[in-house]
Image (cartoon, rainbow, N blue to C red; front, side, top):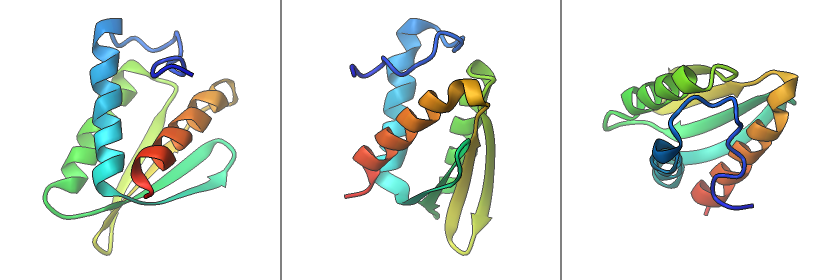
Length: 110
């Protein structure tokens, strides 16, 4: 899988901007990811280290992503020094959620 093969055609972010967005997610995963879980087949939960504007960063990135990929539903919440980010999709986009989970695990859990 090349770096952007998993980005669905329904994404409205201009193609030339997609690598930058992927890099922003990868950076977040590398710097902040503590735990990944899949509480439901269509929902991914990321637990990210809080502090230093982390919640605002997560909310901003999720908001921008939801603006170009309307099939995502993001819910962010602060929880005892962490930021919990739930990412949900419809059944048509399960493969996108799978790919995002794989990227998160590869970039953040070391």
